[in-house]
Image 1 (cartoon, chains in turn blue, purple):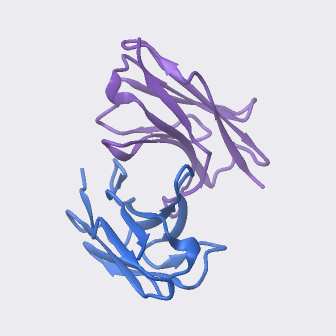
Image 2 (cartoon, rainbow over the protein chains, first blue to last red; image 1 turned 180 degrees about the horizontal axis):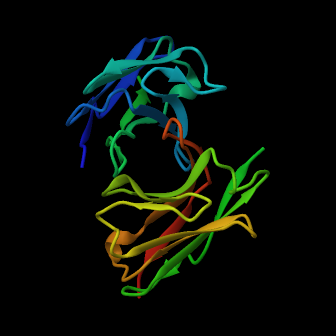
Image 3 (tube, each protein chain N blue to C red; image 1 turned 180 degrees about the vertical axis):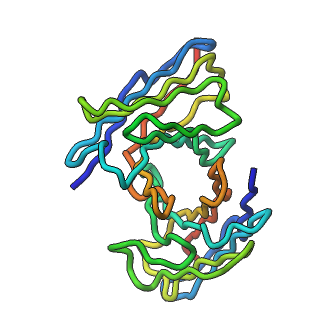
Length: 107
Length: 120
């Protein structure tokens, strides 16, 4: 199985901050990398697919980049509704696997 | 718009079979653009993909669960289902039914999730 490792596991930030989350795969996943946002008690929501393509309806402050094994999710200016947990997921190989999550908390 | 809704028992006894159904409304499971999947989330295991099914009945399973899992689709009722046999406490989780885009292989639409507890 491909292991997905996110860092950090959690971070504290303020509204307006620029935030970057990193996801590293245990082998190359050729940009088959998706990012999800999850709020407490809710299902995950797809934000970014294919490493850098913004899902329809997702604000443009979210962006993704990366290649091979290393990927990042950036929130350019953190908004109150962005405090949540974020997960990366690879779809290059079966079984599809997720990172352990990064929780963004209010500073 | 398309919505997914999980249904099934919230409590299953150890060694028994967990059975869940996902009803798709506002759209059809018979669309060639999508697979239909089950994903579970537990505090200990995080998010775990379980299986996916195409409307033709083609299936893909997580090898770690393959011996205990069966996924199926019912196009006449616009549903798909999951069976997990010989459950233990480790199988307790929130189970999500999910739409999976074939081209991008992402999970773009999720049900609200259903909590399954394993206890005698």
